[in-house]
Amino acid sequence: MSHRFLASIGVQVAVIVVGLLGAGTAAGQAPLPVAKATPAAKAASGKIWTAPRTSDGQPDLQGIWNSATLTPLERPSEIGGEEFLTEPEAAEFERQALKSVDADRRDGGAEADIGRAYNEFWRDRGKVVPSRRTSLIVDPPDGRVPPLTAEAKKRVAARAAQNRGHEFDGPENRPLAERCIVVPNAGPPMLPANYNSNYQIVQVPGYVVILSEQIHDARAIPLDGRPHLPQSVRQLMGDPRGRWEGNTLVVESTNFTGRTSFRGSGEGLQVVERFTRTGPDTILYEFTVDDPASFTRHWTAQLPMTKTQGPLFEYACHEGNYGLAGSLSGARAEEKRAAEAPKKESR
Image 1: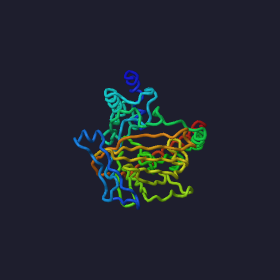
Image 2: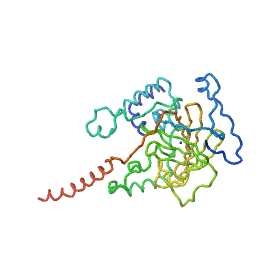
Image 3: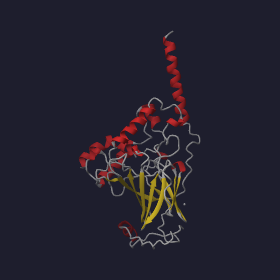
Image 4: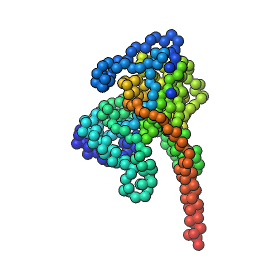
């Protein structure tokens, strides 16, 4: 595996990385069990670690957490069935990954330089996950997002065809992230990015709130067992409902819009997230994506979230952001140039 992996890593790594606020206990809820110590926590402290609790006994997930990682969502096809990297492979992967996506490089000309945007001062790319797993996806076993169904392929193709040639007609035609409306970091699921992969978790009576630093979205998750919103009410980030299963916070989100389109999903998308405190400074974040009309099967990914010092900073995405205006004005300039070209040729 070593030779095969390291031989292909230099070519694949750029694509891999890029494609990368106490709470009230519900009435009648049984006392929650005490969390067991993880092996890592035992080794670090020399004694059994127990998860902290809020004043009324719920697992305490509060704090600021970071999920940045170089580990790709999907396992690179060149690795085949290899699930984990060795220590030397992981070190080499990190070295080549950081070198490949170094935005301070000046090779490739002006266009490449502009495309790299921010320099590395602003980045937070992280490392590979501690397990050295070759993908964040743990199920299916191949570490890949399952294929789209025939229905989903048609839907995606139809949307692309409808937008083709109209990509710059107006802001409504641009991607949601480019318009600073919602980004993959905010979720669900909360996918790590190469900067601003920070979240603040706050527990108040009846709710858990997750604040994402990028775009500063706050997901207020009720824990009182209320039903989901009617199917006629759709939200870009879905409609979340939370519950405790032992020491794990389970958040189930439904009622997404078709515009959310997470990797080709439709309105039937359902995302189940699981947050488990596994040590003094770690939360295991797991999510399962299920949309039978869009994917041939459900799929699950895992990644650690590490406690970090705050504060979160304001992500004023549109303050002084000339990108969108620049893109649209550039398109108008190209249209004007194209319209004037026949006049010049006829002279």
